[in-house]
Image 1 (cartoon, rainbow, N blue to C red):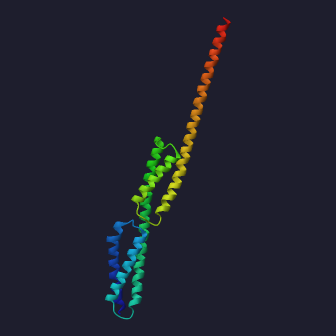
Image 2: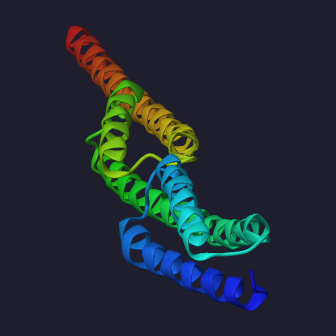
Image 3: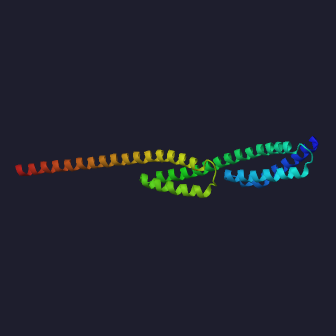
Length: 195
């Protein structure tokens, strides 16, 4: 087979694969990585077979290997873009959750670690519903949850400690006031008895 003819066929098929990526894959990302890999394996078979049908000569399999190598480079780029887009979408959604939960905490809608855990469980359900499966999905959520839970649980404990201190001060002030009133009554009683 003429080297030049083989290069032309490879270039044509690589361009078709690029069009496939541009029109069928990229508009749908983020996608599960397994789905992208499966689609790529199907594409490799399709384009290798297409090359073999058009090619003639002795050097066909070496050129199929060259075609596969070029398609693999494009595939790896798709996986990188998919993971990057997935991470951005994950982080964006988790930031919205964080802001909402922090707002609930500030308003006093979350009063205990148990309530916080229930809200985080609900956030996990929403996250799983909104984010397609990808390689880092669960680890990203788990790391985010642990960090947020530690921060907010510490804030809840701090707020509880402040409330207890305020209650203690209020009770101490009330006790002092009652003791002062008792002393005043005692003095009044003592003064009235002398008279």
